[in-house]
Length: 274
Image (cartoon, rainbow, N blue to C red; front, side, top):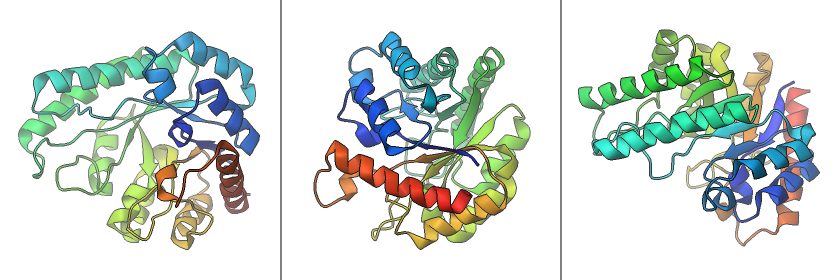
């Protein structure tokens, strides 16, 4: 059985120590710490506080880390944007290693214009991968690249492209965002599992809403549960990280309501992976 986690962004409005408390209360046994979690990010990323949160909640360790990605793009046509995006990702790998994390997830980037990626964009991507490779060689954490939403300008939103990169980079791991893949089709999710199952170390878990967007709960999503059952049948044993958006609900959720929701999501996961 894998480890059941949730992204800290589901509790984005709370201090980090509260977030760890709420996740532990829900019964989940791990956490994906987004470096851009506001209380952490906007206060200069005080690592000593994060170390304290981890130490106070040994039942959630080892955590995973998600590298900064908001407003960043390692494949940007703007060289300064690309440079700082790569630097942030590399520093997240090093921070994850210092925290004793099991996995750090990074985004592959996208073409700045809403057109199919060009040779220039792939050169940028290759440079990004090279920097990550160097960082991975110096650390113990598993660096996992994530599939993005199926948009015309994104890199690595198809199973075939992702598998090709993983074959070329044997040190690199994979975070399957099932919601992103489901936006393309159910068949695309199956292709990701077929081609990449041996390299998957983290799964971002969510269902699609009525608008076709991800980050909805899975307890009332038969299609999401089908994907999870396929992973269970294939003996997947890595992290299963609930990636939920609290803005999809009719009204604001209290911390207590979020904990109850996570407990219900956990029950669904446990039934599938028991």
